Length: 235
Image 1 (tube, rainbow, N blue to C red):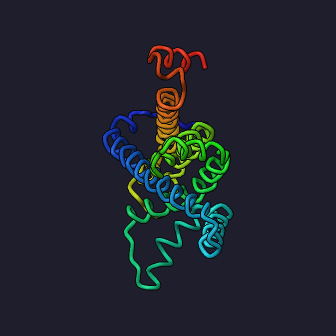
Image 2 (cartoon, rainbow, N blue to C red):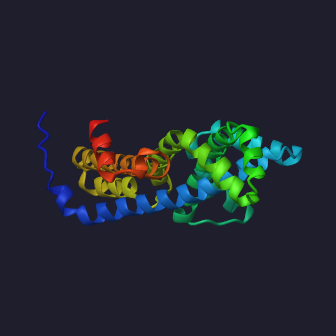
C-alpha cells in the first residue's frame, strides 16, 4: 500500500466544507420545524376521527414510513417536473425532508396525545381553561414529556439524512465532499473529516435537546442550569 495521507486537502477546502455544513444545518432545522408543525397538525386532525381525513393521514404516514427516503426525494425532484412542477435542488431537499419528518412525527405525536387520559382534559375544563389552554397545558406539554426522546432521535435522524440530498446535488456537506474528491481523489481524508463533523453536529444537537427537555419539561430543570451540565457529563 503506497497511499500517503495528506490532510492538507481538508484545510485547503475548509471554508467550502464549513459552508456545506452550514447549509446542512439550515436545511435540517427548517425541515425539522416544518415537519414537526405538519406532523402536529396531522396528529390533531387524526384525533378528530373524521373518516376521510383519518384514512388520508394513515395512507400518508404508511407511504412515508414504508418507502425509502431517496425514492421520495427523486419523486419530488425528477418526477414532478414531468407534470409541470419544477423544484430546484435546495427547496426540493427541504420539501422532501419536511414531508419525511412529518410522516414519522405524526405517529409519535399521535401516540403522545392518545396517552393523555380523558379525566385530565375534563379536569382542565372544570377549571375554566380555554381550548387553547387545555391543548397547551393539559395535552401538548404532558404528551411532549412522554415523547420528547423519540422526537429528539427523529430530529437527529433528519440531520444525518440531509446527506442523502447529495444525490440531487443540493449544496450540503456530503455533496461538497463529493465535489472535492471528484477532482482531488482524497476520499479518505475528506470523508473522514465529514464523518467527524457529522458526529459533532449530531452530538451538539443531542445536547441541545437534552437541555430543552431538562429546562422546560422536567421539574429539575426549574432548579439549576449547573445540574443540567452535570447530568450531561455524567450521562
